[in-house]
Length: 99
Image 1: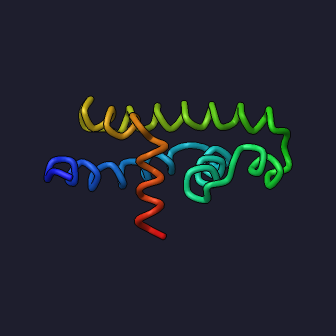
Image 2 (image 1 turned 120 degrees about the horizontal axis):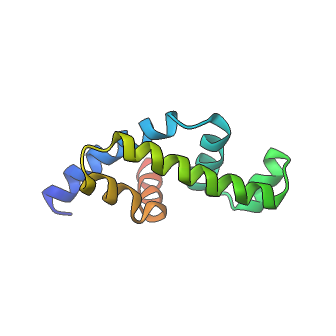
Image 3 (image 1 turned 180 degrees about the vertical axis):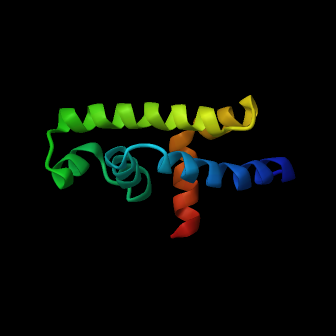
């Protein structure tokens, strides 16, 4: 990675964590089980004892809330865009580095 992209990732990680803390706990849990634990939606629904359709709705809402929180916290459009675009791949990369 270039120095600029490495620097961006250094800023994005705390930004993502701060944004997660600003959304309701049930949405945090859903996102963390999906992104960090690698569970699929039906498995998360089973763990949380809710229907799969309710879990899908919760995931959609969780991503919306996360995007809203990131929008409020990001310093500029580039930081926001680089955090939101490719969220799945970016979180998977963080997860791989932490494991």
